[in-house]
Image (cartoon, rainbow, N blue to C red; front, side):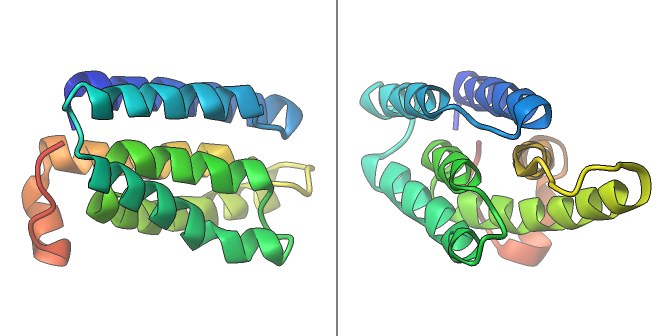
Length: 153
């Protein structure tokens, strides 16, 4: 993943997280715009089509059962699929794991300090993906220990 793709992904996730915190909604046009940008990076050669599709499917499928159980909203599932489309298959898997950890920490924070009963999960997705990108750029050896070679961003 190029720096431009990473920056674009983080910008889209930040917009989604801010919107989710404010209104508990992630607009479909933001998801579609993000997917168009991701596809643009594929067409530009920054990400292979197979990685785009694999990350898209993995990102969405990992959170689909939580949507079907009523735990997450459809926007959260689509946003993780969007993140996966930028990241590729292996990076999407690690990001899903980090997002799940971030979501748990965010849930504890909300239980302790907020009066809201719903959690803006786009913020957890932003934290999980940001954590992955930070690890790849600044502590790649930590990822090698747990996940083996994931490639460069």
